[in-house]
Length: 512
Ligand SMILES: NC(=O)C1=CN([C@@H]2O[C@H](COP(=O)(O)OP(=O)(O)OC[C@H]3O[C@@H](n4cnc5c(N)ncnc54)[C@H](OP(=O)(O)O)[C@@H]3O)[C@@H](O)[C@H]2O)C=CC1
Ligand SMILES: CC(=O)N[C@@H](CCC(=O)OP(=O)(O)O)C(=O)O
Image (cartoon, rainbow, N blue to C red):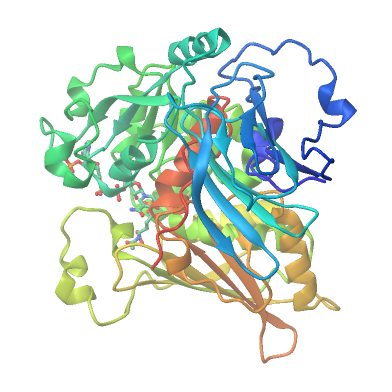
């Protein structure tokens, strides 16, 4: 019996899934693993940056005695767990376990609440990666384990693996670290096991420390921000470019050619540079790089992103809109005409720079429509939808500013194809995204709200029947700064560097 795991549902992380297995109890309460689990395993392949994770650790939980870590079957940072809390319902006993300090014993008294016997196999845990998995035992009891991995001091294999990991640390530059998306990159990388920030740039705030610009990041021991012109890229393997559009093309053109780049601006998103010039009112200054750029809508273009050097990270509105619409268009479930999109954004979507339209007095206590018929995300949305249909699609799109700091909702009105109903749309989206970590269809009838994704990389969506026959309403929500910007950018750089795409992104939403 297998359970859905982060890696199994995480796309590029599929290389190693977290699996759990339950077993019936023996008279001693000690159940040997099934024969297939006991067969000698081949020696572990070496850890490589570009390889999917290989480490596995197997633990066996025995009735009333202990949680025992079996010897690592491969190079692994092993850790232990202690009971964090227990929850009881008439049919379910849940034990929430958490990692013990790395110097504590591996034998933990599990108490009788666990019952039965359980073998839990964690695939591919990486240092500092946090996973949660649940398994229902034969008795109907539920065991939930929240695990993270730290260095285990007691195996030689382990320290070798750690040394290899350290060698492979990716040195990351954040250009525009004093802005909202740059700060969000710094926050996300604080828990990334393989990416370390070696360079940060700013413009007006050049020369300042991260703690002075963003006190919430004071705990991060990072270099001071420098102006781009003073940046030393000799210590950098990859950059997140979090700069305003228009300034980005020339800066990226001047970067060393060996760098991997994820550009969060709009400068490389439109394949047609004439279209860029028309919608952005600027000449394109790096058309040759435009040809190389890969559009970074991760769940749709994962294969191309993996091999890219320069990724154009999608805009926040286009992300929330294309994720539900592209699969429906590809499957011919909706008509290509009369797609109407009503979208709302938190004010952080506009960046940190002071603008009159974004003053508290302009934003609070009201709703602010803008960019009607001419928002610069229209060509980006239409490019993605047209690619999906192999024909030119046009949409009606109206964005709004909401009196909230972060969050984005797109409410999308579509006509269904003849003979198609909302159950068909639901089933198709469900099938499309069931293996994805970060895109989730809610249960039927449940309404996605921006508060359900705050601070996380999730896109939640659902489909509703309109009162007008043949029409459906799709609601999609993201956090504009995470899945709409820095989170998706990190997902992409993970892929480009050969790591599971969810690395460093396992944040649950902050609620309430
Ligand atoms: N905010 C969002 O939700 C999203 C933003 N994006 C895009 O990501 C990019 C960054 O956005 P965001 O972080 O919100 O923007 P901010 O305005 O908050 O930050 C901009 C950053 O760029 C620096 N900067 C400004 N002008 C220059 C320049 N001429 N040369 C070098 N550095 C400069 C700023 O430095 P300093 O502070 O020192 O002046 C700051 O670090 C933009 O292209 C934006 O459109 C994409 C998706 C969503
Ligand atoms: C609320 C707000 O102002 N949002 C921005 C879009 C944010 C975004 O995705 O920007 P890029 O396309 O530049 O990356 C806007 O409407 O221009």
